[in-house]
Amino acid sequence: MSSILQVRNVNKSFAGLKALNNVELSVEEGAVHAIIGPNGAGKSTLLNCFVGRLTPDTGTVDFNGISLLGKQPHEINQTGVVRVFQTPEIFGDLSLLENVMIPTLARRDGSFKLNGWSRVDGIAEVRDRAEQLLGDVDLLDKREMIANSLSRGDKRRLELAMCLVQDPKLLLLDEPTAGMSRADTNKTIDLLKQIGERGITKIVIEHDMHVVFSLAHKISVMAQGTVIAEGAPEQIKGDPRVQEAYLGGAHL
Image (cartoon, rainbow, N blue to C red; front, top):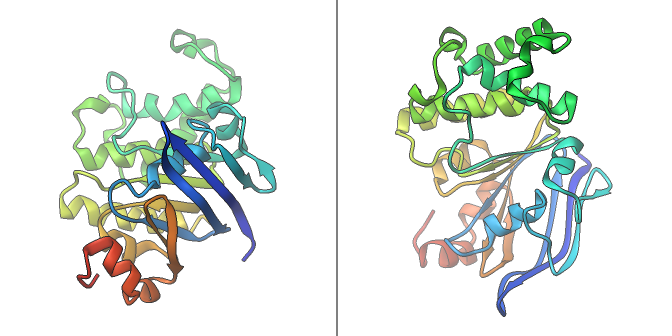
């Protein structure tokens, strides 16, 4: 498989504290690549460098051969990189259907006013696509519900539909099962596996090893701002450096 995201020699310091230290990462197209490590290892800082929220002090981040550095978050989004946040980012006062229609309209029109729905060309087509995506995440029967009334697990599924409607090439998932019950976590794992069948590349930051080992083809382990180990899940499970950094010597 060819590499879709190349990270080379990325460094980032905050007030003299090195958050990222010579990070090297290569993500293969179509794969699920997990990034794990203890709190403060630099995982979310690295993700923020991918989406334009932070600019590294040195190094390169290339997506499909295009540098992401210096681009605004909306420009990065338009290249096909879409991020799912730790806390689901949805429009709580709107219906599920409206939530899934908004990203399509915003992406197509550059910007868009909520009171402009009725005048938008091709609204029926956008609605059909939104309903299709809600069906894919098993929320179609709730499409007229107000988003704030959903459970945590369903909010995450709604947010995934909002991401998928944008036809992403790379999906960045930051703690996608945080705060979920085990049942909701397992549902989310199944949903992410279904998404995998679409060929979308995914980078997953996740503390729950059950999720990581259920989904990942490849795992990078970070500690103190750098990648200390990388490999297939079985290799990582048995790596003593990982056990030491992650669990103080306990077995994964």
